[in-house]
Figure (tube, rainbow over the protein chains, first blue to last red):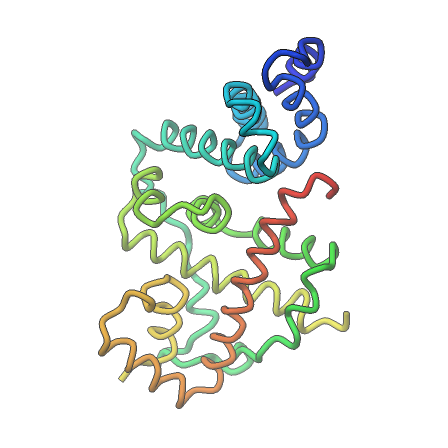
Length: 203
Length: 63
């Protein structure tokens, strides 16, 4: 999506949904682009997905749009556009071949498969108290950003795009065993990262 | 007997929810015996809430 589309939409604002969508493009484009960039690189691919989503929003009955919640509506379309692009991108690739270096278990567990001394987790204190903090979400962002690429793709499809495991496997062309490995790695790594960078700190 | 590494993998991979009864019982017994895995499990539940809020944060146009 570029400003040309937003500008064009505002000029034809009284036709169908164009007025709504032009307003949404101004209000929501940055958030949509930020979200799309979590899943699609380079940035141009993410921009194209946002543009596709806004263009698709033009096609829906105006009364249906007026009654709905724009965030849910726009991000619902965007998620479908992102998933379509991921499916096209990975259709001919075997993600199973793209292994990540899963050394985290060696850090967490000893040879008897018990927690290593010093790595055993302690329960987070009042995690719900941090859910309004922008600073906390900056740390979540950093932790998610540190995931290995393949793990990040699987994790973000499941947790951020709300895809079912079968859809994740089908889209990224990977086995169920690979999926479980990636999800496990992601949740372990993010928990460890948040523990070390937020909950153990004096915030 | 289920050990920490296997329990944590079952939990974090999402397999535990769908696991056969025998595996879920084994996991429960492991949790009773291991306070570290109990702590990890509580944090993992909190992580689900964090991720739901994170998703909402990401799609907030004011951020």
